[in-house]
Amino acid sequence: MSILPDPIIKAIESLSDLPGIGSRSAERLVFSLLKNNSGLDQKISNNLKNLRRDIKECQTCFHFCEGEQCLICSDSKRDEKVLCVVESPLDLVALEKTSEFRGRYHVLHGVISPLNKVMPGDLRIIQLLERVKKDDKLEEIILATSGSTESDATAMFIAQSLEEFFKGKISRLSRGIPSGGDLDYLDIGTLSRAISERRDF
Amino acid sequence: MSILPDPIIKAIESLSDLPGIGSRSAERLVFSLLKNNSGLDQKISNNLKNLRRDIKECQTCFHFCEGEQCLICSDSKRDEKVLCVVESPLDLVALEKTSEFRGRYHVLHGVISPLNKVMPGDLRIIQLLERVKKDDKLEEIILATSGSTESDATAMFIAQSLEEFFKGKISRLSRGIPSGGDLDYLDIGTLSRAISERRDF
Image 1 (cartoon, rainbow over the protein chains, first blue to last red):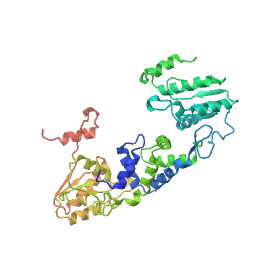
Image 2: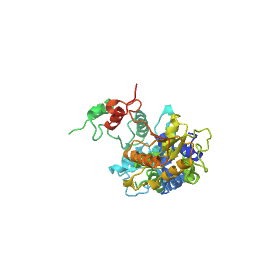
Image 3: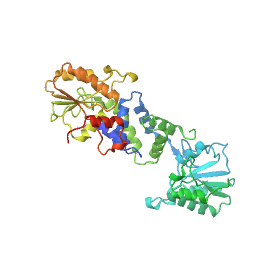
Image 4: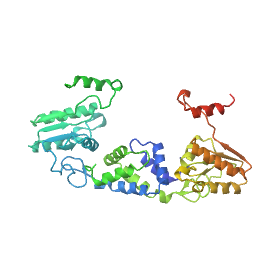
């Protein structure tokens, strides 16, 4: 790679540190920026420059926001009776896109993972428990964690902690075959959950 | 997407303007930058900020470089008798990685494409012809264009222009089956070229 000037190599190296972008893709991105006359390089540079400075975590739900409270927590039209616990802001965004849920959220920012040294204290679990304790309007908590074993274990841990004092309903997302999924391509785990959790027609 | 603060949306939008990065990938990249504490966002921002200001085209071969001449043109150990014409700096980098070629390069920065309004004058073809005219040490010119029809037409155009005054050899890359390629997965075009351009065993 010594045939490339240093600024190009540095740009390639930093972009290839992004998840899912290898050195080949980073190479292509940098060369496309060099050919692009629309100022995209400046736009990206400026938008990333202050990103982490400008973005904070909401003091209530820990979703990303600009001020003290996120756009969902400060929205009075949201249903105060249901709280949805998610692993990451990305999961929150995905759930919002479905328009199926009009309650509030709580973002954990990860899952319990002893192998990666992520313990309950590293997540926003204590804040969740305190929030639920203070909130007397709450009727249901949905533990909308992902399908992995670590996610299941995290949900289990939270459910047990909540059950000690929360008298409302604790639910989780349904498990089953994905929409448009072919049965013969599905893994055994998904398929056995789809049978054991079958619903009346 | 109104549930995300503005700086995040701006960052996602600018990253998704990059080729091959859709809005979903851009979302993931921005959220990973928000979680990343190693300063990667600043690194990327800084490396892109002055990239286009610092990078020029070599006055001889039009490869990207920092000063007047690129690292290859200023390398006196390079074979002056062979010139390899490539479409883009990316192709040059790919050829350099093979270590098969020790001559010099000329970068066209595109292919002739009337549909996209790219005419010979938009590429570095005139500069190539002038360069070859002035260079009396040159014995071979390799037209290392890609496999597309437009690339073939560009190579054809350059070959015809060169033949008017250049008395040395004009060559092109060989066509055939890729290394490790399965015959039954290959397209007909590649396979027919592989047969018609077959070599003695």
